[in-house]
Each structure stands twice: as C-alpha cells, then as structure tokens.
Length: 115
Image (cartoon, rainbow, N blue to C red; front, side, top):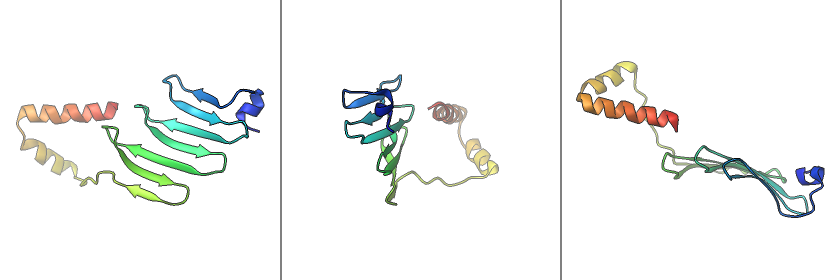
C-alpha cells in the first residue's frame, strides 16, 4: 500500500517536501511513486520509483554533477582523482608555502569539511 493510499489521499499528484522545500515523495493516482533524497545544497542525490529503478548522483562543491549510477548498472564517474599523500609528504608541501598560503589552504580545508 502506498503512502497516499494509507492516508486516503484523493487529490493527485500527492507531493511531500522537506523543510527546505525539496521534493522527497511524489505519487500519482495510479499508485506510481518516487522517493527522493537531497544533499545539503538541495541537489537530488537519490531517486527511487515504485518499479524498483533507482538513480544515485553526486555533486562537487560547485553543484556540478560528477557521479551517476543507476539500477541498470550504468556508471559515469567524473569525480576528481586525488593523489594520496603520506603525512610526511603533506608536511613537506606545506613547508614549501609561505605562512599566508598555509592559512589559505587550512581555511579551504575547514570550509570543505563544513559543506
């Protein structure tokens, strides 16, 4: 039984939104439904429908789609690839910067942790 059927909804489409106004559920009169998830910036990161199909997406800090995967097995991965550095390598690179540049790097890291 769908959400609209449980609630005895008579007007369609039936839509539920979260506190930020993002659509998290949609259903039509024939019982077809979609569930949605969003990241902190409102980008749709997951969608699933009543037939079992789904789509996952990821976005970069600028809102550009960088990853796509669906229930059929399709994957498009344009996420940036990072070199993994050891702590000593990170320290070595930071030591090559002037104090202002180190502050800028640390500030950017903190901002990314909060987004």
